[in-house]
Image (cartoon, rainbow, N blue to C red; front, side, top):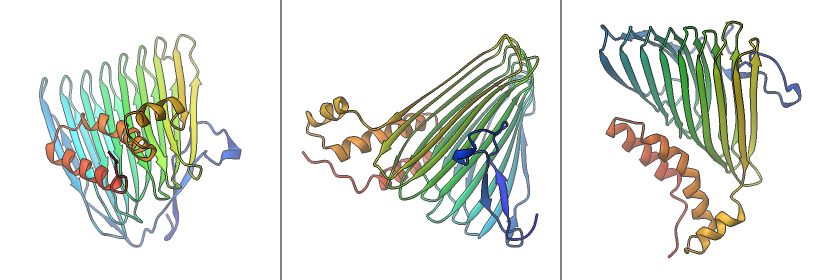
Amino acid sequence: MAENSNKVINRLPSKTWYWLGVNETRFPWDEKQCVRFPEIQEHTDADGEAKTYKYQIEGTDAFSERTFTFTAEKNSRLTVLMDIGTEGNSALHINLNAKENGEIKLVQIQRNKADSKVYNEVCGNCDASASVELVQIYLGEGDIYSDEKIDLNGDGSSLKTDIGYLGQNKKCLDMNVVANHFGKNTKSEIQVAGALKDAAKKIFRGTIDFKKGSSGSTGDELETVLMLGDDVENKTIPLILCAEEDVAGNHGATIGELDEETLFYFESRGIKKEVAEDICARASIEKLLREVEDPKIKELALAELDQMSAGVKEEA
């Protein structure tokens, strides 16, 4: 890769919607300045074992790159908690390998600083009856680019993705999730919920791809976007690809502002519009924070959320 170039990321598996400019995106990168950290590899050791790994990722390097590989061996469970608060441009590459009947749960909280950019790539493989669960909470002040591709290779394997975000202050959120169904009777569930305000921009691409041979498989995708203001920009791109007949894929999206009935409910209880919007914007984040098992990381995330809501005051 040439110096001072861009990484081409978040590519749709099948190009479409040319007029929206969403088939791919570019992440600013400088190979010469990049600081690369040694790869971290962790795994479970035996059947029935459960392990948890925790990482706090910080740094002020202008450009940094980190790679993690996590493997859940047969019949074992592996949980990974990541708190990400870098200040420069960061690229994270995370590889997940779930062996037969193995389980991997990855929980990420993004708290990157203002003017920073984070590229978060997650690639996964699931063998027979294995599962991957992703819980991602995007709270950072900087731009976030998230790129996920999980291959459900084994029969009966599954993917569950829950993403919550709060975009504000001209922040950019650019997300891509691809569930590739290769095995029979595989299952994917993709849920995304968040709010946009203060000229924030968001793209979400969600692809459920039923490959030839994936008979009996199901995929569901649902996104909820709360738009708070006329200056925000949202692009939602659901995509279902199908090369197999005996499959079921569904997608849906709810996009809009708080309706008059909801606002009336709050106002009738003495809660003004700005506070009502803040309560609803926080809801999807607070729901996912219940999945964070580490008290310290949860406390940091709640403090970040409170800071983002600091300008909103409730009047009695």
